[in-house]
Image (cartoon, rainbow, N blue to C red; front, side, top):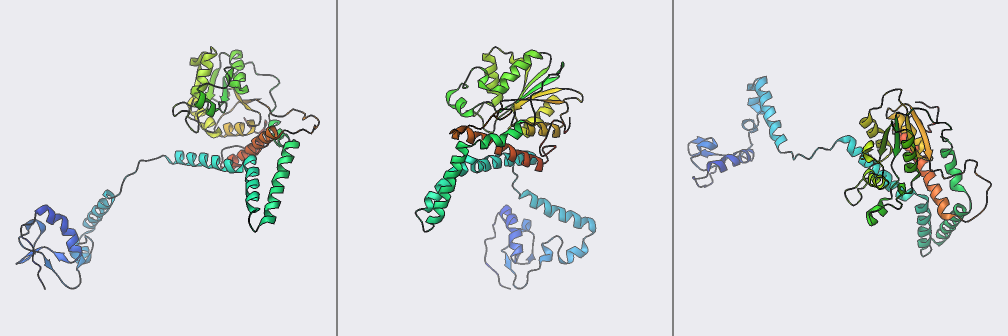
Length: 373
């Protein structure tokens, strides 16, 4: 057994901190007369050669495990776990539902950035052009030709209107409105955040040029006793502070509307949150009648979502139609921008219907007037 020289005047707290490490590596504190505790250190440490006896250091090891009772073993194991927990760095808690909603929202935005018809056509054109300068020139020519043909078809044919018409026809405007209405709900999505953020004013002072808000103002005058609700926040804050509800409130104030009579729901960022947050805020009762105002192409998904969130007595009031009811005779004309917009809106709604139904956020894959409540 060899001895290592060490200064005897070691601070006691340093010796206590080192005791655990030294004992696990084969070092033990001891004076010239034998092993002592760190608190009674009177001599240099002794290095013990050979196998390390962990039974003297581990609370459940070797002879100690056999000698300790069940209660003592439990206390010793609890102390070990407590020391381990103290080493864990605590992170701020985020509600799982909020995290999932954020993940879904941003995933949808990123997916649509790529899947939008205009982005797909542009991507095909760029990819095909790049391939023309590589050994895959033949494939590049085919891709460029396909992109040009698809763009011409969208511009000359009513592809977008044919795609969007079945969605808009699902809920026709009500021929007669009820005599009594308990509430009027208008969904957001009516404010151009880019314009507001850069200019500080909406594109138009007359309800921002939105058919949804125009219908909301007209119905609010017809049913003054009903509860008037605007639901709409924003995926990104306009100038870091304003939500869509804040902007619409200022628009209505400029028009002389009493904004204190309107209930503002400003946290929602998509249709599912529109329905759920409004339901939590208003707590509608069974048997009540609520008018739901949104675009005709958006109405099927909105109705299915509101029914799933627990709303009953929903009366759809679709506005802002993009197609003629009978889709008049085809007249060939070059309308690339308008047709591409209609096609994009139709594909967005079809994807939204499928995803909402798959996630359990809608009562039906393609909700209709007689599907429920």
